[in-house]
Image 1 (cartoon, rainbow, N blue to C red):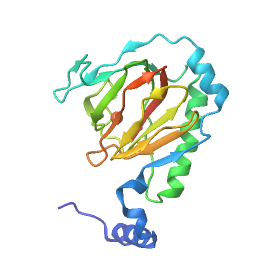
Image 2 (cartoon, helix red, strand yellow; image 1 turned 60 degrees about the vertical axis):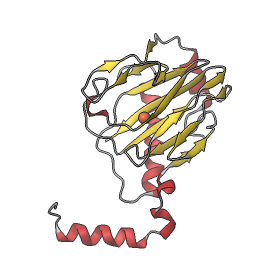
Image 3 (tube, rainbow, N blue to C red; image 1 turned 135 degrees about the horizontal axis):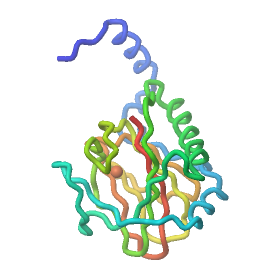
Length: 203
Ligand SMILES: [Fe+2]
């Protein structure tokens, strides 16, 4: 059993006790916020002409594999120094602030680089959880939450499903949710058009 300092137990218990009961259900830790990413920023990123690569799926042995049975999506990593990094970071900052207000015990120590995801027609990501301690070079441990920013909504299909809840996100919106074993999630097949989103993991 983990040793916990008594004062921590007491202060955490006080905060949890003060939350309404509904706050403790699984669904209430999934948050959807609109008007997070400025629409002009969404358009600029989409039209920039990034150089995409086919997404790979990381296995538990640490290998990456290209498997169209599990994911069909193209990706590019946006890192510090990129033209759009600061603006995207600001959108994440806003999302984190909102989520922190909704969840007083939540705090962030680290945010990963941003992965721009492009799903063309037929694209999807099968159900999974984000055990990223061996994924894509982002070796930071298990994320507390994963955050998706949605850059467009002029496509069909491509719903985002997390823990059984189905979202059809609006352009410029964000979804933030714990991405552990309790929150399996997937992207349904895009049936028309191209779906653009950005992902980051918060540690
Ligand atoms: Fe995920």
